[in-house]
Image (cartoon, rainbow, N blue to C red; front, top):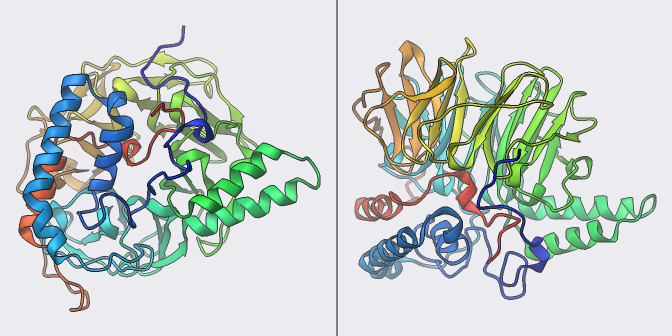
Length: 462
């Protein structure tokens, strides 16, 4: 029996009046929009209030959320707008220096040898060598939100984010170069669709690619996997899938390889050996056993969205997402067993230790681990909604979310907040005012923190 959820079938994106790509729709990227001049988080919050609130909250929660957001906007809006100049394109605007980096909105982290690297809003990349006790900011050429980061070794890494951005580093995250953006992704998909018309015409695919070009760079990438030291696969909204065979220098579309005709969002990508797993919206599960040459759609045990996954072997993996649903398979998705979870809050991130131990984080601010076949909270005191977790040496965990980087002891106790070293970026980049940062955190604390809330789900009704 298929479990039911509240994000089941909806109309395709091209049929959603006022949705992304519709005439007169506001752009989804961090450029000029109804929230221009306000801190970057207002874009997702605005979309959550106007397009997706009913999908995540009960009516009373929606009303409370809208009230809190607008009160915060009124309190800080005039001061923020007064100092706002021309916004410019966030794809070309370097990330601003901030003294409050580890307290900023952070979404993901990875290890680059002995260095911990965390990424988040407005192009923020933070580095820690001690580990995760103090942080310093890296130089980043864009100011869009970064959603995921992975490292092949202590020097070479890739980060992805909003506006279809892909960044790479060859010095352990000290500095980054832009390798891809949403405009280039749209053009690559259009070129691929036009070429396909010569052998197997697909008018729908061509029309979709043309719409992507018209929309511009407003589609986020949500995750990336390093399949080998030189090969990478990035996935995101509306079924975007881009692959690189040269360490992230050049990228080509893989979307045509996927059985995803509705363009459902792809939230996470994982791999083990030659096996690759993609999970996404409305229970979407796509699996390749031949290193990505071919993908098949797996039977899904749940009709709601999966936001994360972990692979224990090429055929054994676990998927998790909406309402705390988590499922386990040992035969590459042919049969599934549910994992008991006492907290019915959406699972938004996960991590796997070197010993195969799995950890999960959710919107209730809990770190969860598997014990005797069921999930159990590690921390007795909930944090703000979480989006990512990274296991550290000594049994500690680094959690990431709307309240930034927070450390948990092996017993789940909250450790002192990490500190930020003085920003070393060019002096022309102004630091984030503390008052603005505090207001940002106050307003975003009640908002669900999944990467899924950064864009309207492809199957959603307005």
